Amino acid sequence: MIPMQTAVPQQPAWAVGAEKRASFGTLVGVELRKMSATVADKILIIAAPLVLVVLSIMFMVDSSRPYTLERQLGSVFLTVRLAAVLVDLTLVKLIAAEWHYRSAQPTLLVQPSRLRYVFAQATIAIGAWLLIGGVHVLMTFTFLAGRLDARDAQNLLTFRPGMVVAACLVGAFCMTLLAVTVGWLIPNTAGAITTYVLVSLLFTILQGNIDLAGWVDPIEPARQLGGVSEHGVIALVTSLVLWVGLAAVAIIRAGNREAA
Image (cartoon, rainbow, N blue to C red; front, side, top):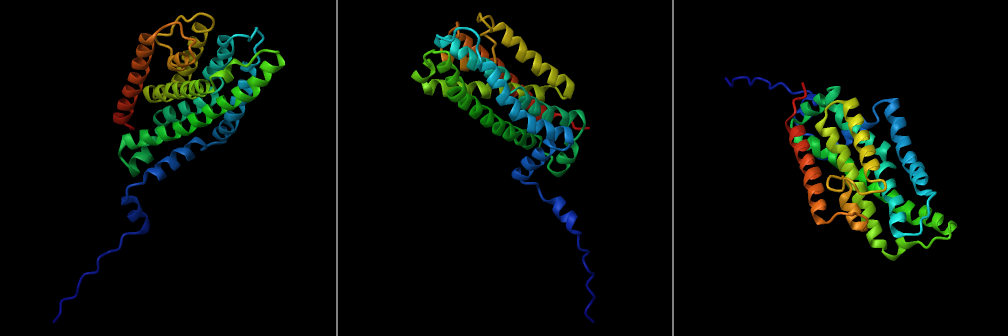
């Protein structure tokens, strides 16, 4: 007699799917959905780009005499520092809240690699940086240019448009890097948001009229590109070492942080 073969039980579809490693694109999509998980999150996402444009208009309406390159770039760098605050706070909230409210746990159960998790958040931050940088460039060459014409001031920014575009993009990148670094370092929503706002305001005050803190200014690379920094290459190096070093420490901490 031929022995009867025991039927192998079939796994349910959900179990088969759970055993598969989530793709990186899926991971990014999950993080994007977390950004708009609640009604308040949706309002924040809608308001962030609108506030970016409104604050750009406010900071570029310069009441002083914008007849020098330094004055005109001053409006640009003030915009770079503060106009994207709501977009950056959205990133801070996304990253810090993951650990604060333990919402990282379901994602890590699907794929346990914390570094992939960090890189997914970094991908979203890169998208935010491109949005912010694009708006900075657009507002500089449209609204600010129109304001200078209305004030009968020569638009000195058009003499070196490549430098201005690079300064806007580098400055936006530096502020975005500051936001994600704070979010990765401080796994507490309120603490991370407060830290980001205080750091941004502190350097806005210190670097307002006199270059007092170029050695540690987050956007010192952009200021050096624009030629408005009063310090030399050493200040550029110290600023880069500080903030890139903090970002590296933040990635390492986030990559080894326990979700429970």
